[in-house]
Amino acid sequence: MSTYDIPVVSFFKRMLDPFLIWGSLILISWVYREAFTGYYLVLMIITFFVSSYVFEQTGIHRSWRNGKLLKYIVDTLLGWGLVVGILIFLGFATKLAYRYSEEVIYTWFLITPLVLILSHMVVQKIASDVRKKGEVRPVVIVGANEMGLNIANRIREFPYLLMEVKGFFEDRNESRSPIPASSILGGVADVAAYVRKHNIQMIFISLPMAAQPRIRALLDDLHDTTASIYFLPDVYLFDLMQARFDHVGDIPVIGICESPFMGVDNVVKLASDFAFSLIALFLFSPLMLLIAIAVKATSPGPVIFKQRRYGLNGEEIIVYKFRSMTVSEDGDKVDQAKRNDPRITRIGAFLRKSSLDELPQFINVLQGRMSIVGPRPHAVAHNELYRKLIKGYMLRHKVKPGITGWAQVNGLRGETEALEKMQARIAYDLEYLQNWSLWFDTLIIFRTIWVVLHKDNAY
Image (tube, rainbow, N blue to C red; front, side):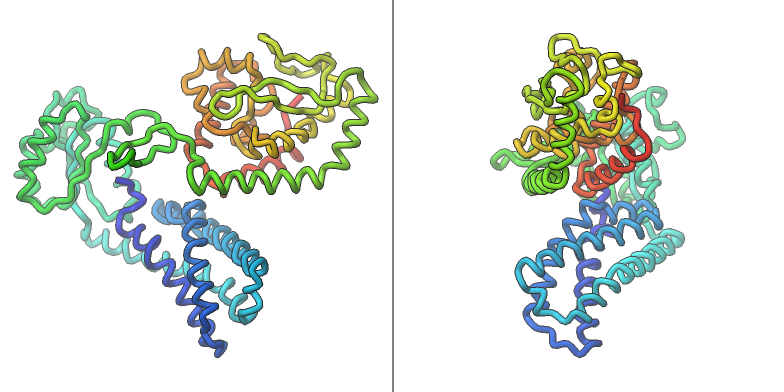
């Protein structure tokens, strides 16, 4: 079970937010004495789907759940701004924009985020008061292990879940458990009696899958109680990437390592890459022509440097860059560029410092080999070296490599002369894969511009 779908948060996602957005539109049209035609109904339906997707991707409900008011306000304003941008585009593209009153629509655009923020603050205050009065759901956790401790910590960190952990049940020797002995209420056989006596409403079973006989016996004991029972699979003790529930035919399965770009998300990523790379090539084509002339005129050799890299699913691709060195290394051993590297040409130093040598990679994006944002591709020789030294290194190839990435905007661009630096870079790459959203990509693009203009450790 995801704490993201506990009733209070689910209430916002599925009921309150859509009705507030729709209600604001209806009320504003009434204030302006505007007839509420079928076109407004169409607008409400479109807004529901657009806002649901955008708010899910920007994570505003996660910010609210975590009690981070300022972040929630910022996320709401930015998220609604993105919704407005999409609605305006669709309105003019379909010519529906001319069917609405400008006064009504613009007022609705301005008022809605304020209504959302105010309503969430009111409900947050109500939830806080409810918790202070002790009106929470009592919870017990069966299994005094890391997974059980994790769920207990989440419940304590997110008070608006309106839960309270009463304690743990465990058969094992308490000295082997990460849970304090004072929190152990008894063995697994004692759970049912405790639940009946103390009217426990929720039970989380955190026993390993190997304990199937004990779990079956426990479920039999709990049949005459009204407690809600949730099983925490011990697969969540492993490092997961885009974990999700799915089905193969009618058989439920749990994915523990998957690409973030599935279904609609894959279409969104492809469309944004294609559109952005076309715009970039159109805008930068005069500059790219000047760079090509400068590279050719200042040193012998080709204008474009081509190097083998690993792409999606570890397949080899050819990546383009403007040549910035006197050599074009692409063998079993590739030396990374170093500060004051004598191989770097005069124009090459400027290109690398300004990241202009990367511009031809927009062609790679159009070819479908790369993405605008993703883990930076490494030379094949470096991949073969580091995949043996760093755990999870090849997981970064579950997605297409990017022109820029989360590691690069966090200062891990350029030479990785120590293993620790490469480990840190891979950690950021995997964090990107675990948390991808279109909003995350947008953030990285803007931070890339800032990094290039203000601070750069490329040479």
